Length: 370
Ligand SMILES: Cc1cc2nc3c(=O)[nH]c(=O)nc-3n(C[C@H](O)[C@H](O)[C@H](O)COP(=O)(O)OP(=O)(O)OC[C@H]3O[C@@H](n4cnc5c(N)ncnc54)[C@H](O)[C@@H]3O)c2cc1C
Image 1 (cartoon, rainbow, N blue to C red):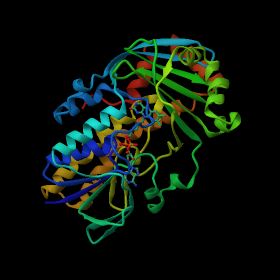
Image 2 (image 1 turned 135 degrees about the vertical axis):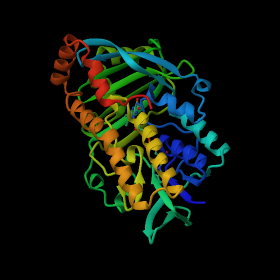
Image 3 (image 1 turned 90 degrees about the horizontal axis):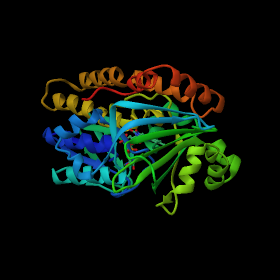
């Protein structure tokens, strides 16, 4: 039986573990945290993932997600546009979803090593050795890198995006508020944008992306929110009318949208570790899940000796590029417009008068149901 180590137990790692365990491999997931835990994420998931998750025996209904069918966009000054979402999505917190997938994978026999980081991966004569923060070294036939946007392993792999500092930070809250349950709204402000949509238990996820420069200008998150975000009247209403459920927001920095490679030193990279789409597209989670399916389908062929490692790696790079490269490019282009007051005012005004423009952009940053 082949030994597979998955580094990182977010969506990509958990979904790949379910599929590969089912394929007959011995799967170990190494996760540096302990479930359940909160993550910075907008928690809106495109419906494109539903058929595949159902095929894995994932019961989304049990998590009581919100059904999201409508989209609203506002400019920093409060101009708006509304559009129905063709495919739509659902809202569930990562706290609940990841914990559910973890328990499901554990019940199916996946081995988890929690509260532990992978610190180094070496490849030698067709085998891997994975060093852990607890001092152990584990052997593996295959390693899948699902460790998210940025980790120390990227330094070891000398990935170019790791050398450059990224200007972006992400902030997230769970709130209780008065807001339509079937709507996802994207509100622009100077140097950033915020998303709000419903999740389970009558709660909402309110999450935004801005720059370190913006935070530095105001000195604290609270002062920045007051001075910049609340210039947008819709965001102001959220702060005024909502109950904030965390004592402190979840915050991450160094969010890089720079291109990455999905193969590093024979490690198959998946999810954000292979490439992060800009959050305003709301497709990173679907890409992580779809990427896990692609890697697992190809690894299954390798496990049954239908191909050698070299073919597996070539096929993976090709499939990954075909599925995701264009979405990432379009996402980067759109990101260039949002968060900049004059450009985003113009963008909202223009999108409003072109019928179908919003759904055209959504189609180009999302995939089809798989
Ligand atoms: C501000 C913001 C808003 C977003 N909003 C949305 C949205 O609304 N919809 C959407 O679809 N996407 C959204 N995204 C993107 C989405 O969150 C990611 O694309 C998705 O979480 C990627 O999943 P992943 O499994 O690749 O990584 P993650 O979910 O980040 O999981 C990586 C895991 O690896 C672990 N790890 C890291 N290093 C190590 C190590 N060395 N050893 C062991 N474990 C390690 C981490 O603890 C983590 O659990 C947003 C992103 C941001 C930044």
